[in-house]
Amino acid sequence: DSGVTQTPKHLITATGQRVTLRCSPRSGDLSVYWYQQSLDQGLQFLIQYYNGEERAKGNILERFSAQQFPDLHSELNLSSLELGDSALYFCASSTRGNSNTEAFFGQGTRLTVV
Amino acid sequence: SQELEQSPQSLIVQEGKNLTINCTSSKTLYGLYWYKQKYGEGLIFLMMLQKGGEEKSHEKITAKLDEKKQQSSLHITASQPSHAGIYLCGADINTGNQFYFGTGTSLTVIP
Image (tube, rainbow over all chains, first blue to last red; front, side, top):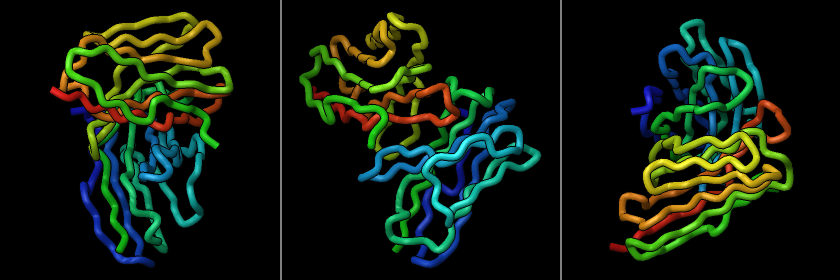
């Protein structure tokens, strides 16, 4: 158990819909990272938050957004969903903000868009 | 384009055999990480290398970062079925905040 909790574990939704994925980092970790893993793209970095503020942005679509709350949990919002958004979405947390030093990953949320 | 290339893409070995997985970048790596993922599950951190020439071992797994800090190898000695999974390298490149993952290597160990 990495200490990082992601909910829900599975999500099935229709195209055009909006979903929210939730991540609770390890106790004491200030950084949260979101990744998308799909069969054709591999593991892609989406976005990082550190202590409530956006720190780095990767290949995140404009239809996607994220935020980190005062209690440090984070949510990834995916809107206007397309079939191609079906993927495993991972959240990771670490203590530092400028490096992915020993990031610990959650079990992921498997999103299926039908 | 892929910042980190891994080879091979997949590997099937007999139990007890040794194997090596490579991770290559065209740019200097600032912190190279190896993870293992069981199919459809989260990533498990294996080890991190930062210095050129650094080598670390954990049980039967050894990882090295070359002197130029552009290539890393992961070596498994006397593989076991429990080693099966997807091995991913990850790295900070260009000292930026973005973290890149390799393409992954799928390892199957046949008993």
